[in-house]
Length: 273
Image (tube, rainbow, N blue to C red; front, side, top):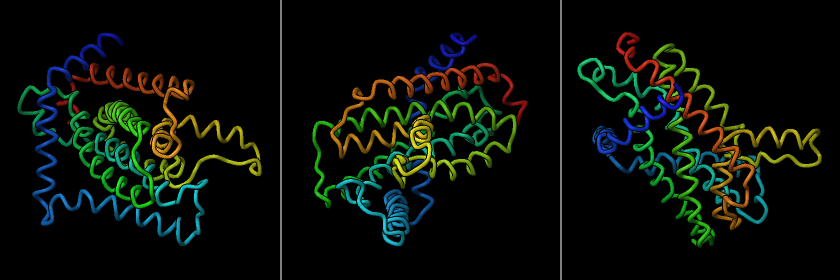
């Protein structure tokens, strides 16, 4: 059952790569056409979000530099990963239900829909990276060979997001409340991930070793921290073998569960509408 479902979903996605690209491109262009300033908002939205968090946590709360790294530079590097994962999961959750008009009228490879959301959001991620790089350059951080690790961690973010989106998209067809629950949980998850703070408790915190271990169980810790380590600390992913093994184990398990759900309900989506 597991291998059959994985083979089914994998084959369907590989055979429809061009279709995934076309759908993602169409939806992206549709979003741009719907606004007067078009692609400007793909850059302005993340910039405004980062500026807001910097003003609140960096200025108003007086956050000090993280080590010798200015807080804004540290924030924008980690937020780049969050800006990719968050919409992939939230919009991926609704990826099947939002295409019910297509599913009901023609034979359509439903399992590709979460991937179309991730491909679309990858473009927005690239826009966010442009802002991040500009900020890092202003603070005197320039590319080196370790920055290539961003490619690896972007692949990690894509794989994890699609696996989670696949599961949630099916569950959202079974229970419509899943979408609202996911949006609420994602707001909370940001504060349990190292997006705006380090998630690294010191000796002055009781049970700090246990708390730090729990924080590292969050797969987003691996991705967000990986972005920062590639940019600031010249650290490669191969220097964290245990975390790397844990992350990919969790991601592959989630992907297998998503494939099984897709395979099980592949002929029932119309009935669930």
